[in-house]
Length: 167
Image 1: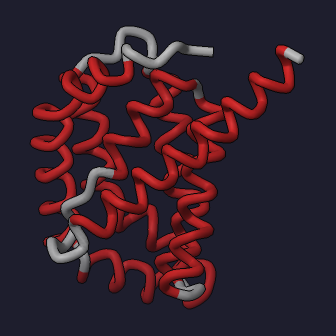
Image 2 (image 1 turned 30 degrees about the horizontal axis):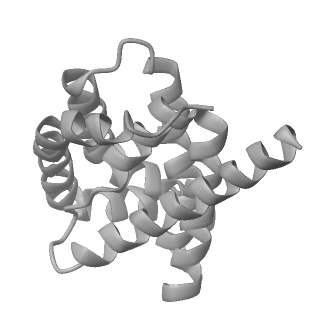
């Protein structure tokens, strides 16, 4: 019975984490490249582990495809957010607001280049470079906003999670 309850608890947490990511995405939709998904992904990975966080970000990516349709940028979510989970898992030990802020910042700066990989495969190197270069101003906003958001919110969000038992 314990294993069954553990599975149910994990599925509920995955659903709740995904719902929070969707709500956060919608709440900040009006601000180009200002998002909480990067920080939430880092926090979820540190607190719940990479498997649970990976399930949540893949579910999040699937819901984004349902909302927005399948396009170049929604396809990228299926590898960009899992990459952040893996990076967060590799750095999870000793994670603090400084590490989270730097990881989140660098991830935001690299986001456009990571997303350009789909364009590279579909349309070739020239199109990928053009697509990435056109988005550099947005990547600068993305990385800077991620830095500030993670620095300010990492500790309060981790403190809130401390009321939740780890598996």
